[in-house]
Amino acid sequence: MRPTMPRAEKAPTTATAPTGKHARREGYEDGALLTVDDVHVRFHTRNGVVHAVEGVSLSLSEGEVLAVVGESGSGKTVFTRRVMGLIAGSRDTEVSGTVTFDGSTLTELDAKGLSAVWGKEIALVLQDPMTSLNPVKRIGAQITETLILHQKLSKQDANARAVELLRSVGLSEPERRVRQYPHELSGGMRQRVTIAIALSCSPRLLLADEPTTALDVTVQAQILDLLGDLQSRLGMAMLLVTHDLRVVRSRSDRIAVMYAGRIVETAPTKDLFDAPRMPYTEALMNAVPPITGPNHVRLAVIPGRPPDLLAPPTGCRFSPRCPYAQDRCLTEEPPLRDAAALPGGAAVDHSYRCWYPVGTPENAQARRVNAERGETAAGTPVTGEMVPA
Ligand SMILES: Nc1ncnc2c1ncn2[C@@H]1O[C@H](COP(=O)(O)OP(=O)(O)O)[C@@H](O)[C@H]1O
Ligand code: SF4
Ligand SMILES: [Mg+2]
Image (tube, helix red, strand yellow):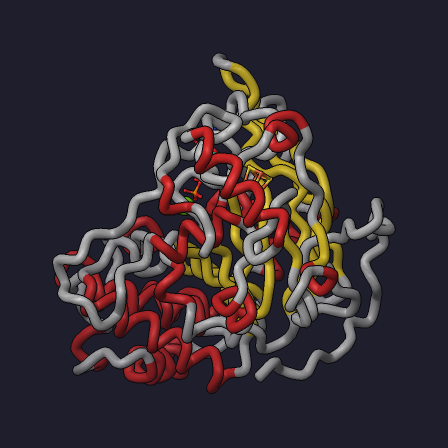
């Protein structure tokens, strides 16, 4: 169920009207807790300009879980760091767009203003706990430091709260853990510690960037369940970033699929799984092994590689890998369009970028054309299995 959405005091000031017949901002919503509007990040490197994030807009309501999903290199981390304010404009880094949190425009705050928000209102959990933990400081000191700084607790109260926090993230023997150093704990335990630190000041928004990628499969599920449990218990909003669509199916309210720096599809989780419209989303789903299958079932790999963001393909960025690509896809980039206008498309808040969306007669025709000629308009070989029944 979608959580209720209190309205922020101030509407974002830079929202622009959607353009084109069906064009709309991806997931853009007035009155959200977090609003990201038309964010771009470009790195000027010796080899050229890396278009890491291109015009991403989305919004997140209080208490909502939004998953951002895409293959490695699609711009998820750069996007998350920009939302957090950890990437700023410089001689080599070009940034634009706005990020608004509860009525404050974060992209206009200086370092002092941002540090008042970090850890207090918005917290971040990263892929590798060792990058967030100080290896030469005891666990307890790393937690109490934040509590004393942000919550102005006395040392004694902070110590008691540190033990309580470690217990709340499921760490056994928390009284002993506070005296240990990070290297004395396993990867899963360390990630529990970083989650405890992130939660220490009861943030309203948690950004979790691939929080389990560095962990064993069984520990991954435990950590994701812990995050989900804490998120619903504390009523936090969460932006859960992952390359694995499987893990967010039961753990998110909405999904935004990212490809080559852009959002290519966004929908409520159930609608996305029931009726994906963007062929890349469909391909990601086909790359998911059957839950009931044996462990050795191989993922159906998406052919080709994610594009080089130094020189992304013209037209649709997925066209070199898409089994349905037609001539138009090679020259014209599809805008984000409303899926409600499609046959069988009743979902609200469902948008996609594609000229030949899955489940439409246009898509069936594109499949037929490519199957007959044995390749896509981009020259990628296809098989006869593509022809719809
Ligand atoms: N500081 C940087 N300078 C140049 N390119 C960068 C920098 N940081 C990230 N990139 C590039 O931006 C793209 C997106 O990276 P990233 O956000 O880490 O992807 P993801 O998290 O989806 O795997 C990649 O091509 C990466 O090489
Ligand atoms: S059909 Fe065309 S527009 Fe749609 S994803 Fe494939 S290449 Fe892109
Ligand atoms: Mg990443």
